[in-house]
Length: 106
Length: 173
Image (cartoon, rainbow over all chains, first blue to last red; front, side, top):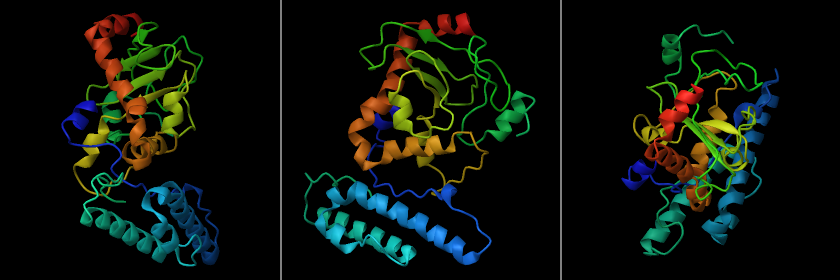
């Protein structure tokens, strides 16, 4: 592992990890209940992402991405785009001392 | 879960980096898990590595399968395999827990297709592997890299350098 890191083939801590654990999704016969369970799970993953990284991404991220959303899929898309814009801005401003400078994305 | 009868079938089924199957050393009271293939040559050292790890001592060994990059790693005295604990950080830092170290697969996973699908039954270490990847790639864990990942590789190097691995392997294997 160290060899790969030293050779630069892989570097630790270069991503903001967005994780979903669908093993806890319930499987009811009713499709609406199933969809609600999936949505709840996606929402939980997005909320955890926000809790983990809001302090690094700044207040603009926290204010732009709401905690509760009726459509978690669109919120997922919005969240990833927002993070991309924030990371792009850091590079555009040339802030190479910013902690997220070498982060590659979500 | 059907038992696997021999090593060849194991290789075919275990193509993805999930937990290899193994038999516990006879001196432990732990039950068999999944299938018996071959006893792991377990290398042990009870002194001399406290500078590398906060635990009292470390037991480490090479995996039994030459095709695999997995290593059996134990922090402290072997107490149990943490079945059902998928938190990599917890397993690495609590003493007495053994796990199959798959950190060498991280670099391999960088190549190939961008989407990986690992299909294995419950208890094969999928969640633990995901947790390990999260702790490696996650920005918030970058300062824990030395503590969580570097110790494993250093120990293996020290064991090899001091020629402890062959002796210890023959003692237990």
